[in-house]
Amino acid sequence: MILSISAAVLLGVFLAFLLRSRSLGAGSCVVAVLFGFYLASTGLAAPINQVTHDLAHSVAQLGH
Image 1 (cartoon, rainbow, N blue to C red):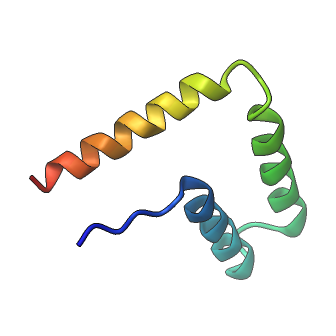
Image 2: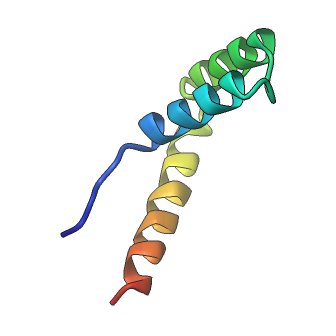
Image 3: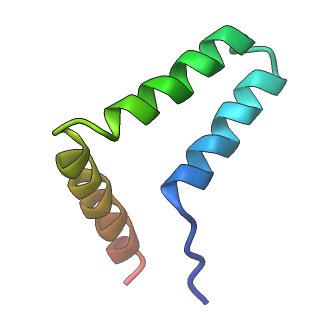
């Protein structure tokens, strides 16, 4: 069985963990979320999506 999870959900859980463990303050968490939001609307969004897609595909192929 293959489990598929969104990168946004995974990163959101990671940010929540950092916030909860007090490794990341509330202000830093807001900055990280806003940075991701604004980065998604730039020309870098497509290359970043392609790199993460390729990385996920490569990791998935390791099991075969």
